[in-house]
Image: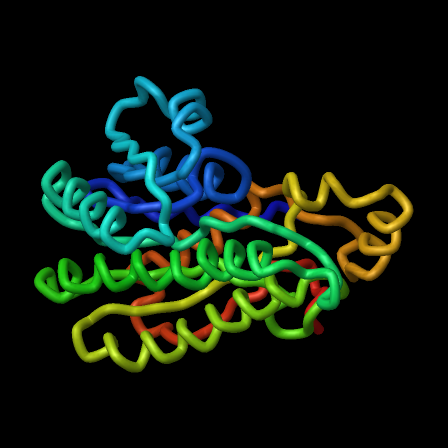
Amino acid sequence: MSIGRITPDFGGSTVLVTGGAQGIGYEIASYFHSSGARVAVFDHDKARLDEAWGGTDNVHLAAVDVSDGSAVSTAVDDVVAWAGGIDVAVNNAGIARDAVVWKLTDEQWDSVLAVHATGTFTVTRSVVPHMRAAGAGRIINVTSYTGMHGNIGQSNYAAAKGGIIAFTKSVAKEVARFGITCNAISPNASTAMVAAVPPDKLAEMTASVPAGRFAEASEMAPAVGFLASQQAAYVTGIVLPVDGGVSM
């Protein structure tokens, strides 16, 4: 059986992706770039950002800490000056600082909440006025199964991702009247964080996935592309699981 491919045309669009120097963020940014979009890539790691994207046409790079609201506001204004607007914003930036709750430090808690939750907020706050002025926009946040179900050693990560889910739904209600949608995906992909899991634990995690495997990071991008497309104009406030059935 042959299964067709649907690849939206994002020619003429400007897409902002945070955490776009590696992993899922890099694959999402690459997807939009190959679909004709101008792509702005934010990442805190300038060296990695330059290595991944340096010299690429129609790409704007910014080394920015997404938890710094002032820096994000300036970086977003720079993107608008470069491209004339922002049509799609993908909040993907994230880190992990795992520990069971009785060993979790203030720094581990604060840093994870800052990058995931505060970073999603600062970027969203900065792009919405530009989208309102344009009368349209797409905001897609990257959350997690852990944000709905929790996980041992990841209470900070779960709190951040759960907060992003609630944030997504609240923002969707606030901006719908302006022609802006706000959705999220919940991925289950092979990333650097997954690669760091001990082999016996990884085998156990893989066995729990009905599809029998973790996705490649690139498999997350088409789901984001759909939510960013005109075909999803009436879809807002949802969390789309892209997880091989693990959340069933």
